[in-house]
Length: 279
Image (cartoon, rainbow, N blue to C red; front, top):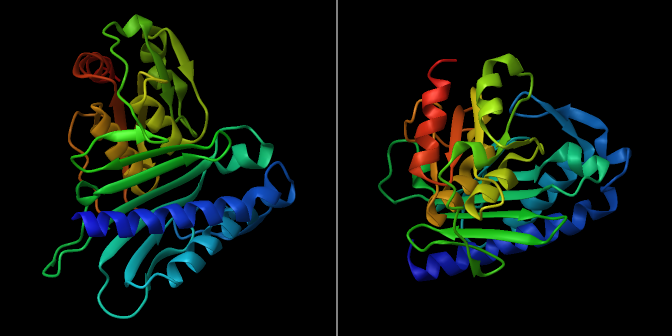
């Protein structure tokens, strides 16, 4: 992505983040926001606050002067504008929906951009993401990364923690409908566990050292949820793979899923992999 494209898509992302945040603000902490209005393209229920957030994202993108493809967990995949798409925007309009409805201050938005080369024939993958933004609306922390240029929060460069001992780390986890007995050994091996229910934000927390690791071993995380945060973590210097240590290469599709191990460094990553091998 050249400087011109970086500036253009960066401004688009900032605009949709700002307007989507404003659109949902009256619904934070409200019962109306949590009302289920339909089933999303990803097969999960869509709440009213989700629908409002995504509608605003689409409205902003419809005014963009370049054609693009939007991938979002509620609406699925749509083409916006005329002509061949110049980029794929992977958006989770509201990361941490339940938190927003209950006014628990860990909820926001995730936006990733993958430019589409003119001669591209095969589907793009998560490896093609070149820009990522994750914002925690409750704290106004905006995590940003451009491929090859590092990561920042509110303009300040970030990097993961330097913890080397598994017994000293703080680890987040995605445990929706998981048999906790399957990761009991791992839970007992770390200092503390955190379960916040906002995957993109929690991955960004690994990037800036708030967490030391984050795991999901159920192969149930959507690429939509992790597309932006993956780049942010990698650009900060962190490590992110699936539960087997393989590079994430999933297609940019709304139903594409993965397991995930995200850590501050190779040493912690290796220790978690070794424990999970026995699960």
